[in-house]
Length: 277
Ligand SMILES: [Zn+2]
Image (cartoon, rainbow, N blue to C red; front, top):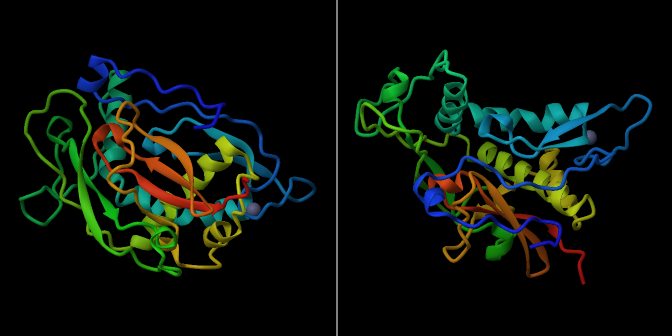
């Protein structure tokens, strides 16, 4: 863990009982260049902020002056598809929590397919909306498993996640999504991991050309970069999301624990060739 990162909070008894929806802090300095195409700001190039993890998933941290307009549009497309599809239930639950804090129920809940029920989506009231959902887990990233150009994952399974947001009227679980577009999903995971790497380790955190090529659509082998971390990876259940970095076989690797406090297995993302040492 880098010296600049705060020490992980001690897990209290209470934190274990009510898993957190907080996220650990990260360094946030203006970048002054597009993190994808590396264009610096200037005449005709306007840089805007980039979210490290989308606000829709509870991310509050942004990197200022970090993305140019064409790259923002290009990289945001698959991210949005994924947020609207695989993350529809968890993001709705987080919105319910936020809005309940303001004493106002969510205005509209998306239809969901209930586990063990009919395969057609149903609309449920907030107190019956599923607290349990599933997110995909994969094999290891191709580059870490010794497979060079992985356009598809070695395997796709689903892990059950539970967000504890208080009592519910009816115990329901959202059915596992079919994952119609694994590439778009993994692309979104890679994008968030890359943004977190740039925020925590700086834009020169490694030779990130291959991952930036992927972000800009110049290559499609996203599962060379994205996989699920092996079992022995440390869990970070005191945070909603968390990230850690390590080096392996000359690669800088991010372990991205999305919905860690909900019980999700961490993803492992190859950020680039390590330039350390
Ligand atoms: Zn750009």
